[in-house]
Length: 102
Image (tube, rainbow, N blue to C red; front, side, top):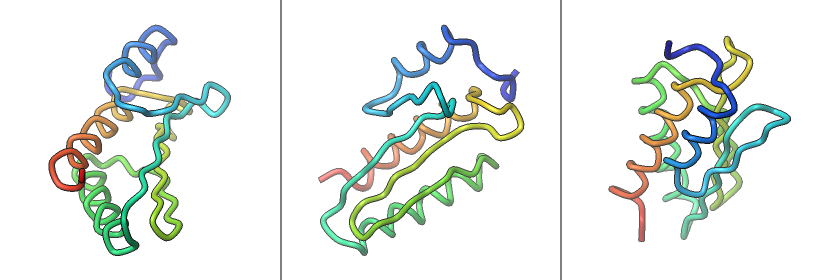
């Protein structure tokens, strides 16, 4: 099921599909950081990510510090990682590749 907490094997398989995301076993989350040429571009990406999150009804922790954006994903209800986290991470990577990569 989409909201069930994933096994270690499923997390490993999910990580193999992602590009440069970090897995934190202690916090049971995945995270990634992006750096942009300016604040305006970083915030534009943040807005687009928020739109994706709203569509998927899965809301990440987002930290914005000037030209840097850090996103952390985990499923609160499952108290760990689920398929929803990996689906949103993949969607965020596609968004970046399509609209923001330089």
